[in-house]
Amino acid sequence: MGRCFDPNTNWPLAVKCIQIPMSVGKIPRKEDPVSRVLRLARTRPVVRARDLADHGIHTSTLTRMTRAGALEKVGPGRYRLAKRQPLTEHHDLVLAVTAVPRSVVCLLSALQFHDVGTQLPHEVWIAIPRGARVPRLTAPPLRIVNVSPAVFDLGIEEHRIERQVVRVYSLARTVADCFRFRNQIGLDVALEALTEAWRSKRLNVDELDRIARKLRVHRVMQPYLETVVL
Image (cartoon, rainbow, N blue to C red; front, side, top):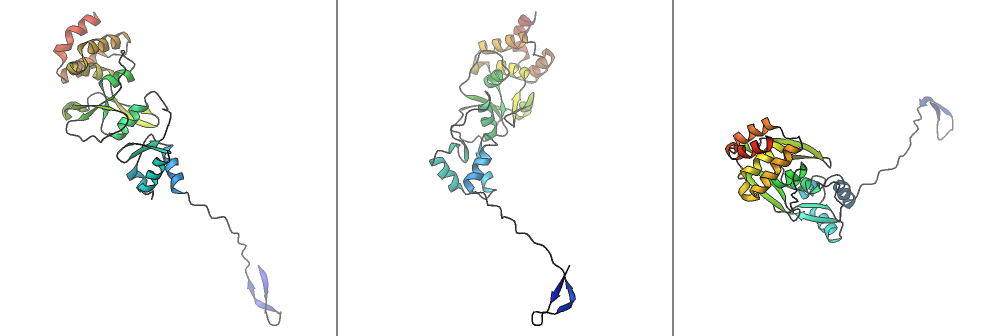
C-alpha cells in the first residue's frame, strides 16, 4: 500500500491507496489457415474438407494449397500431404479404410497383411456391407467385395497402423473367404492361402472350421484341409 496526495496542495490524504502491479503480456499470434491445415495433415493420413470446416478453414484454402503443390487431392473432399512417403508398408490400407469407414480389409489384401502367400495386389481389397455406399477415390485403387450383413462382422480384427485403427479379417476368416470367392480370385490362390497359413502355425483350425460352416464353404474346403493337415 502507498499514501495518496492531493494534486492541488500536495498534502497527504487520509485515504490509503492500493498499488497493484500490472504486467502486459504478449498476445499470441493467431495461427494462419495454411499452417493449421499442414498441422492437421501431419497427424493423419487423410484430411477431409468437412473436418477442416469445423476448424474454421474454408475450402478455398485447400484449393490454393493443392494448386501450390502442398496438398494432393485423393478423392472428393479428401486431401493428404503431397509427395508424402508412406509411413509403413500398409499405408494404402490406412487410406482405404479411412475413406470407407465401415470397410474391412479382406481377401488378397488381408493375405498380404498376414504375410501369407505370394499375392501382391495392386488394388486394396475391402469388404463392405451389401448396400453400403463407397465414395470415389483417386488413390489408392479399391476392389470392393459386397458381403451379407449377417456374416459381415465375423472374424474382424482391429490393428493400429499409423495411429489409425484398421479393421482386417482374421487369417481364418481370410482363408475361408478365399474358398468362398474362389471364382473371383482362383482356386489356386485359396489352396496356397490354406497351405501357407497352416505351415506358418498361425491358423486356428477350430476357428477356421467354425467360420467355414457359417460361410457355408465347409464342404468345399474340407477335402483340401484334410490333405494339408494330414
